[in-house]
Image (cartoon, rainbow, N blue to C red; front, side):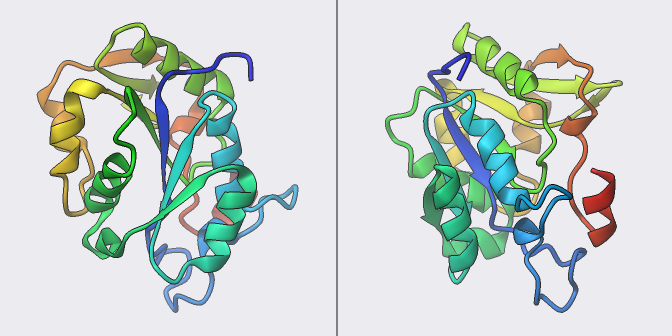
Length: 195
């Protein structure tokens, strides 16, 4: 670990992934990248290169995913509220990290975010920015950093929009980076080859 952030990582891994497998038989986060690594493990591994603690939020019944994330080094948080969407999952991660000084929120289906990008978000957050987001070619991506002053707002999140309203209503420290990985997620089996 080149840089150890004061922030706590929150890895959102509770989605259904219905575009990946409409029948719900295969969890996209357990799908393997070309090198054989599960998608969620790679996303967690990259986040753990910058922060010392990552809370991975998963839905009940996702035992195989929980094991993969534990093996990667995450603390797993199960939340039944995940059915209500990303906002509820994020709130569960924030609630489980009372001692955090800030959060770097990443998505488990985004395994190609460059470690220097995560580090840049962490350094800005640790340096006093209250909201931090990376941008690639003008488009905002992940991970996003939240300072402690946003804890109460994050705890009230619900539904499927996550923290989008918070990010649109507040001044965000914008990091323009050359990292297309901040926009690339795994939505379909074909994405595994192209990511």
